[in-house]
Image 1 (cartoon, rainbow, N blue to C red):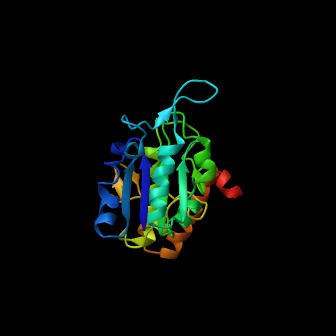
Image 2: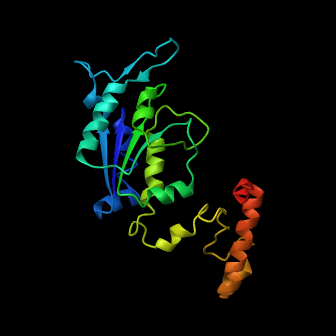
Image 3: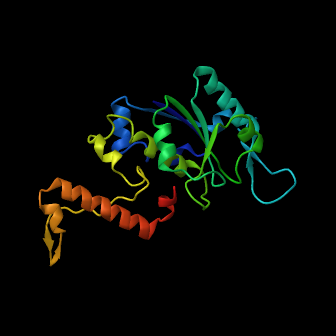
Length: 225
């Protein structure tokens, strides 16, 4: 898989993609993540990428031309399965969407900044828009990193135990059940006996029951889906 990311602040993406699982996935050749500095496509001597909004108001807006020039250049080099804009005023990202995106070959992600991007970019180029929640950040770089992390960990070979990803929260519209490890007894707080029993049928039943209880208590909306 190849993932291209267009950013007005590309330095913010250095750390998330140069450590841990994402770094190892790139070293293995399982994913190629390429970050493009929007200012390389800026206008004039000062590489302008933003301007004040028509109609007045506070803040600045990312201009259409630098973004369009960058996207057109990238599209001339390869076909993209999805061109994605990360923005708070979009459908909320969920595991179903992540699962689908993890099966694609080429993805292009645009990160917003300031008050956002010229609406015409969204109308002309974007094939999908996602939000990571109902709140506003200073830019789209961190949401883009979250999206990429969620996608890449599902690529076969990225996680050593692939079964682990399939049992995560939200894969079956349930939250994960409680998990425990050594010691079995910590200052009188004990691990449930069923997990120590070796009876895997009973263990699976216990986990399913606890997952359902947790989902009902914490995220009952998932059960409606």
